[in-house]
Amino acid sequence: MAVEDTRLTATRRTEARWIERIPLAYWVLGLALLMMPAFANDFVLYQIFGWTFILGMIALSLMFLAGYGGMVSLLQMSLAALAGYMVAIFGTSAIETISMGWPWYVSIPLALLVTVLFATICGWLAVRTEGIYTIMITLAIASAFFYFTRQNYVVFNGFSGFNGVLPPDLFGVDWRGPKAFYYLTLFWATVSYLAVRYVSKAPFGLALQGVRDNPRRMAALGYNVTAHRVAAYAFAALIAGVAGILLTWQSAQVSPGTAGIGPVVDILVIAVIGGLRRPIGPFIGALIYVLLKTFAVDVLISLGLAGERFQLLIGIGFLVIVFWSPDGILGLWDRWKENRGRDPLTGERRER
Image (cartoon, rainbow, N blue to C red; front, top):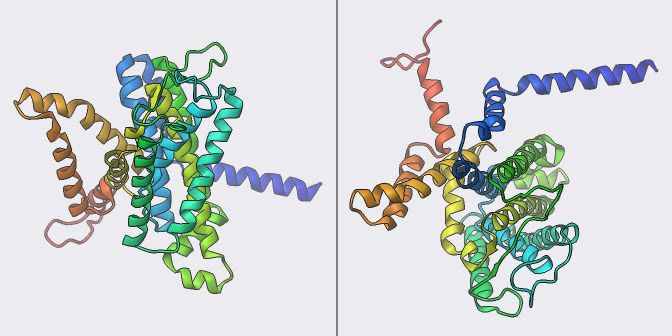
């Protein structure tokens, strides 16, 4: 009994320390996000933040692979689109000749299972290379997936894709309503963020980081380097798959354009802009991207410029951020905090 009490006390102390380690800013941010529907309109809730959370989750899956595994994958948007396609095929849509009409508790798990299996196979191929070769292999798979879905009409309905793909009617709630969809995406974004934080501190995550830093030494210690990398692809695919289903529900459709080369590269830009070292970075990058995507075009048109130059703004911003800080916006923030306490002439820290 005494031993059990001691273990219980130690567990409570660990939980207390974990709560204390959460910065105050995170608690304030969480409270603000929960209260957002009280003062934000439907457009902001549904289009700005809903889209931000979804793109942030897809970029988070890339951040997990690149930041903790040292593997840059351009496959994540394709995995998200695959999950959306599978939900439309296994579930219900306006294309009744292809959709099977299975209930959500069958179609959603099957969609995620197919996505994870596909990512596992692709990961098994990609992890056998390094650096630029990994990027090229994942880009080649993403390109092949895009052209295959556009040309296949039997399963993927070709260029048109699927429309009328709606979330299930649970608890009498319209989950495509602005407030309901906001909380739905916020919930899964939070779950994904916490899952990445937990896995990064778990034995698997620590081993994966060891594989990233020195794969030969980890192999000499008895770790299966290939298995850890492939498992990382599978875990990242699960996050991207959930985001892909939410993205399909948001627009009520999925098509080859969802996994086009442009969106594939955009996920990389989002992850790099936010920062690849911390899980919060992809969501920061996603918010910046969505704001520019939503409002920059109107600003350019009002200035008499072509709306297509929005991509030029994204490219310039990407180059500037990468040039000044390889770790994105979070890197600039860390550098500012570090330099704030230094003397501008000597570079030494000021005494307080």
